[in-house]
Image (cartoon, rainbow, N blue to C red; front, top):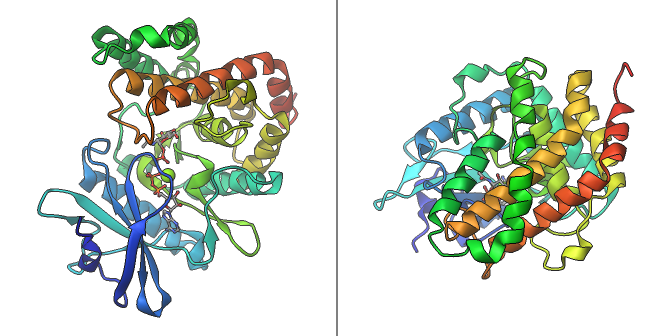
Amino acid sequence: MQMPIDQFAISGRVISCCPHGDGHINETYYAACEAGAGYILQKINTAVFRDPAALMENVAAVTEYMARRTADPRRCLHLIPTRDGRSFYTDPAGGCWRVYAFVPGSLCLQSAETPELFYESGVAFGAFQRALADFPAQTLHETIPNFHNTPDRYRQLHLALAADVRGRAGECREEIDFALAREPEASALVDALARGELPLRVTHNDTKLNNVLIDAKTRRALCVIDLDTVMPGLSAYDFGDSIRFGASTVAEDEHELSKVALSLPLYETYICGFLAGCAGQLTDGEIRALPLGAKLMTLECGVRFLTDYLNGDTYFRIHREKHNLDRCRTQLRLVRDMEGKWEQMRAIAEGFCRIH
Ligand code: ADP
Ligand code: GN1
Ligand code: MG
């Protein structure tokens, strides 16, 4: 495939352009240029993001907002416009492409190698939310409607089950039963939001550890990336998604389920980092909702992987047979482990409230 990197206002001749990173959604390439400049070229997954122009309006608005408020260019993402000044390029086949400056001297981790690094990622996502506290939320497009609406994710699971297009439901009966047994709990966060008990904020909504860049030298967090799902949401969503990915003892697609567990020390470490980054912004009600965020984001992700497996792997990129089923199994196992540790999870969060 011809890479359209030359369509963008990059400096220097491109020496190489290779696949990069471990995202499940977009196609990502690293382009190295003469004179040392590096770029991230991405083909936007338009099956997932149906309105790429709206998506790129969000990304441009958020990156410009953050760039105006920070003196250090490595602390936020910078879009590189096309040579004719647009935020993305549409190729003749209709593919949509964008380019970011590669953040120099940065690392991207797939697992929390040390508690300090996980703490740093919490600081980064907390600070990201705080930085957007006054962002005009009404100007943001909803890039994926109902993204963290867990009951709606169940609705999609039911559709996939009823259709069972690949005849796979029989082999995942255990996972289906586990997920359906927890359906009554799935609306707890959206209900609390509807009752006005939790405030709507501008959140990232995809707070995996590999969506934070770390300074390779200092090992401190630099900035948050993957801004495609920045939308109004709950702080519990951002917290919970980080826990499901980073405070698990194994990778998201581990085969050996007996190894899957929630690390309570990492859970506590992340709360410390996230609250430090939020700098006092979270209410006690939000802090008390953090354990629920961890459990529901893990359950929701398990339901999403299961749904995609039943649908024939049309959403998440897979690298092996049954990859989505393996991913689903780790998530559901993690939910089960959280249920066993529920009182401890609650008590740890309670310890961070101002009023007990
Ligand atoms: P996806 O939506 O597919 O997860 P991401 O935007 O997260 O795509 O990008 C995929 C990977 O590319 C990241 O996990 C990270 O390793 C790398 N990456 C993305 N943007 C940058 C950047 N500006 N600087 C350095 N690395 C980046
Ligand atoms: C996807 O894009 P990426 O790989 O950072 C997904 C998240 C899931 C995650 C599971 C837009 O994240 O919602 O939690 O995979 N992103 C989208 O690993 O659906
Ligand atoms: Mg990503």
